[in-house]
Image (tube, rainbow, N blue to C red; front, side, top):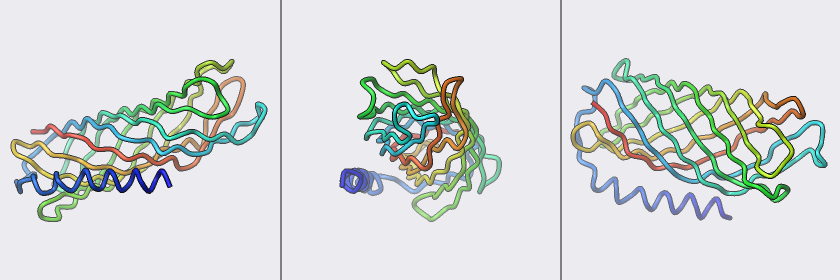
Amino acid sequence: MKRVVLLTFVALMTLPMCALAQQVDSSSKSWGIIAKGGAYLGGEYYVEPKMPYHWYETDLGLFSGLELEAILARSFSAGFFVHSVFTSSGRFDGDITIMTMGLTLKGRIDLGSVELRPGAALGYQISAIEDSNLDNVTGFSPGAMVQVAYPLQNGHAVVGEVGFITQPIGGNDQIDLTFGLHFYLALGYEFGG
């Protein structure tokens, strides 16, 4: 139920920005920087050996990110990103921080007044669980996202994004920690030229 309310809230917040956006030609841009923030929707993760459980669940949390991209062709861009997630779990007393950094590849589809940007991300992930006896957990994080950009003047845009992070391989000297799709919703502002 929380996810439905959050999705509705983000959709309603994005609609007024569509009305304010002015149609501009974004094909002349060669780079972009996106600062974004939003909600991490939580999810389950698996720990081996169990401590004392195999399955843990993270709560709804905060998501933030910074993305730098080079627009290599009118319909393609590649870039570098850093994402942070701040959440908690009912089975730990402390907070959980997940930081991911890596590369993105995105298509750029002009739909008239908006631009659709489906993409994939490959990242290196570091997770810290406060108030536990665990060292930081590292892992490989493939992910995907879909952005909808509403162009403004001077190469700027308002960007809505839905995406997910994963960790199919990861751990430390004490445990293996993996998880499937953990979704996030974000709203950002793009600077570009």
